[in-house]
Length: 304
Image (cartoon, rainbow, N blue to C red):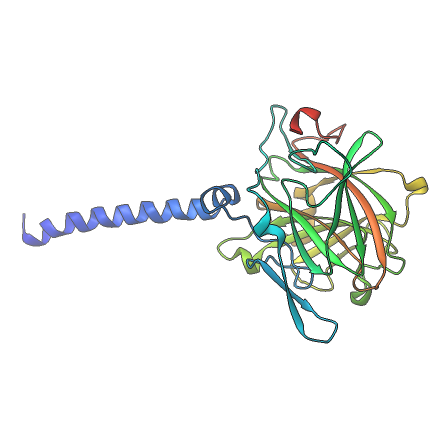
């Protein structure tokens, strides 16, 4: 054995160790659940203007005087959130609250969710509407989103179902017009694309629009990475609850033209800042499932 051979074996072992570490780090960073666990940090929320994901705890919005003002995110004040896991029947429930307060209605961001304020202040209340537990979102010339982390493979759990009710829609809201792009109820599914999720994430938005007809599919007027599907339009008779069910994998394939990646986050949103109006909506729990779900109400046993 030559001196060169003796030196090459330790070098080779070091290269193997380094490769294993790099592979482990890549696996860690590619999983929202692992990032949240190890770094105590969630994927960043949807940005109302850019339609991308943000990594900073503040959002700069246009002030009335033309300048920019930074609004602190409530994410920094929210306790650690649970990432929902599949139950025994192959469903991943996203309840409106991980823990229900003793007294309802209860103002504030429900446990398990984090808010991001883009314009004005978030107005959120946990309520019971009949037998349903729901979040009441109100907007008055404002724009904000609620989001929570998930780890979902849409190839295994392709169906997303939820219930919602529009109480008051922004009268001139129209997702097709940049200057009137306001909706009372919006559900966004966010797909982080690695290795640059902050700039490359894809987003599907399912919205309840005031004027655009059901079935409208467009790219957001404010962000090219956000694809919008209008699933409800106009006021519901008697303010009735509606149930929505989407095959997320098929929607993604149709909108982006490639196989669906994993879901890393779900967001709920309401905004009336473009039309300078007001809106109100109720949104119940959401569920990802392997097959269509008959009942989208969250089991009581899950609400601790």
